[in-house]
Amino acid sequence: MMVAVMAPKHLMRGLWVRLRFLGRPIHVDWLARVWTRSTIRIVGGGSVSIGPGSQIHDYVMLMTYGGDIRVGARCTVNPFCVLYGHGGLTVGNDVRIAAHCVFIPANHQFDDVNKPIWQQAESRLGIVVEDDVWIGAGVRVMDGVRIGRGSVIGAGAVVTKSIPPGSVAAGVPARVIGQRGKVQSSSVADAVK
Image (cartoon, rainbow, N blue to C red):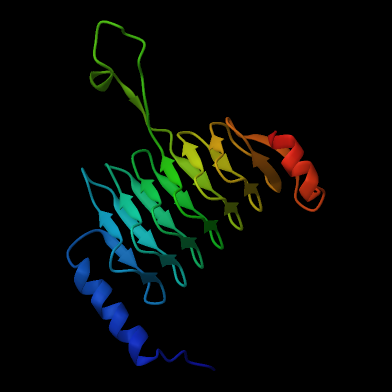
């Protein structure tokens, strides 16, 4: 039987992360890396869990706002991303999230014109990103969305509806423009025009 041995720098990093989040409902696996300039906050309840081999880069913000944020194994969340918890955010394994993405698992109701929007109800359906997904730079993912396994979301897309597994989606709002393995790079560029 093989036993994994942690290098001293990984051990020290793991101890530092545990001290940083001591006493809070934040679980960071020993093999995950959370950069020092990232922000992870429990706001109004909820919890955060980061799986083994995942990386949360500098200037990333994870804010629970009463919901749970789960990041699976071997994921990367690149600089300047914002992941809110509200109605729950689940990111599967092997997911790549490029810089400047925002995940918002909540939405304001605004039907009553006699009442300020912030005083009206809020939906909190949650967001699920399945395994092996690549989300391009600057993507916005809205409440109630499920991004299927193996999908690719083009840079700058606004995802307002669920995306089937293996899809390539782009645009505002995002729409499926093909399936992985069947899309030529020129057809992706043409579909976004």
